[in-house]
Length: 139
Image (cartoon, rainbow, N blue to C red; front, side, top):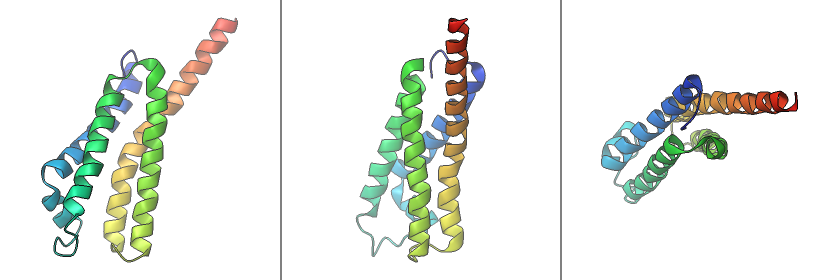
């Protein structure tokens, strides 16, 4: 995120904040998160571990994106977008299979979409900025 225009940094920063804060809550208190998602602990005793694995992945990813330079951040944003699209799809499949009701499925999808929107906009702006630089260098 270093060396970006303020508006790109704001988009990337908001994605990092969303990703980091949700993950930190899940890592610190996975049982609370399970209650919020209506996941019974009795039949899912491994779920706190799984939540922490997901959470640490997103915490590390948010930190890496936040400190990345201009060259690296595009690749990292692509990875974030792929992860969030997969998360939206996974929530859909979980809802279809009956693991979550409709409102829980939407909540999970919207959580991923909340990070996905600034990621896509920031990546598009980075691509446009790179193509503008190429055009200027050609002239």
